[in-house]
Amino acid sequence: MMITIPRLKNNGIVAFLMVLIITIGYLSYQNASDYAELKNVFELEKKELESELNIVIKDYEDVSFDKNEVSLKLREELHKIIKLRDTIQNLKAIDYGLIRFYRKRIANLATQNKILFTQIDSLNLLNNELETKNDSVKEALIEKENLNTKLKHKNYFLGQEKKVLKEKIAVAEIIEISSVKVEAMKKRRKDKYTSTSRSSRTDAFKVEFNLLENKIISEGIKPIYIQILDENKKVIAPAKEVRLKNKEKIMSSDILMAEYHNKQIPVISFIYVNRENIHKGSYLVKIFVNGVFAGKSIVKLR
Image (tube, rainbow, N blue to C red):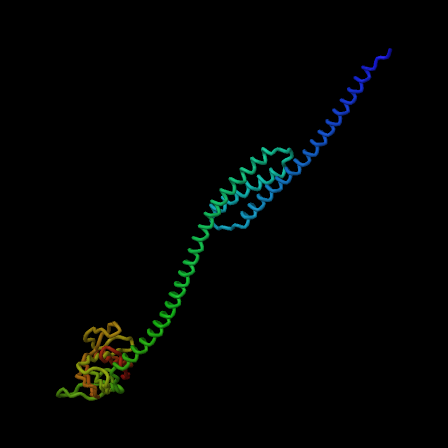
């Protein structure tokens, strides 16, 4: 008698094993497929994060600001972002926890960037306003400098005109004189004097000239100073020290006061001297009218 039950049992085990193998194979295939898909999604997530960070990096690199404090802050933030991007690029393990962590960090960076760029925009706006004001101030200064230059030129020419006018007025106010005639005189009897050319007989100098007509100068008393100098420039018969219009002081040999009415008038001066002080040589006679040098003459004695 044959027993068939064990065979059926063996067939059942084989079938069960076959089903188990197929199931495991299917599950393995399914897991492999899921892993590949997960890896692709992870890589895509990485690239998206890198792209976002590259955009942020470019934004930082495009920003320019001259303030040192702000520039330092920008460089620090840029360094952090570049370091974060490089960290994400080097991720090997498939870990969505890390992806979420870095997404959160990028979101925080975006918030900080918004605040920082808003501050930079405000500072740039203020800087532009200051530059505009500086340009306006510079233009105003240039206009002022140009005006000052024009005024300096104008004042210079006015000064020159004033100087010329003053010189003309000064010339116009000078009373000119005719040629000066000088004679050495010797005393004779009864206080009479005659001309001489001998130094040893000279008792006086006679000086004659005319004040010429001047219609511009004011009328009135005009002082006349006469100075006689020997060859050693020593004043002969010094009378009084006087001050000229140019503030110079001289010792005069004679002082006259002429009543001048803008017309020609004759002037005669008789200057007494001591014979013992008169020696052979030339004597210079200088005439000053109204405090200004007017003319001169020389007399020679033997």
